[in-house]
Length: 132
Image (cartoon, rainbow, N blue to C red; front, side, top):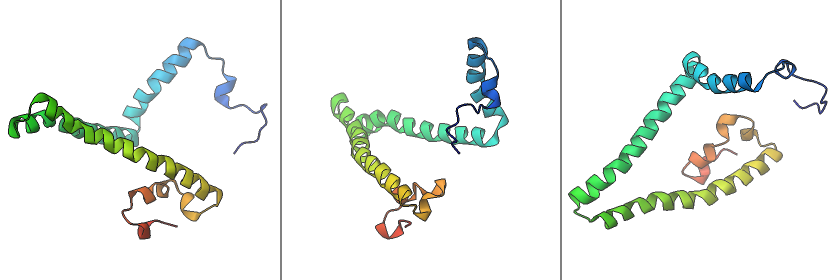
């Protein structure tokens, strides 16, 4: 909640911290959270697995297209273009959806109240499954 009263300070703002202490706290906080918070560790493990699989596919492209399909280096390199093209085609969709979500929040639609429900319309395959 915002009070617009700039005289109200948090306990962290009252402490006088030097640059060395501030950088130490800032740089060590993520590492401490990794080992002390189960949800942070689980999320890191999930993302590391997802990225490992994603980048292993990129390592397998030359093996498949050059080894199995006997394409030359230049032609097999063209197989990376659909990944970039897909990202470029998805970009306008996500930009549009952010404006749609902003309008839905302003209209106080019930599905915008929960953070978990805000990205569900992008995950659904049919318009009938969109939560309104």
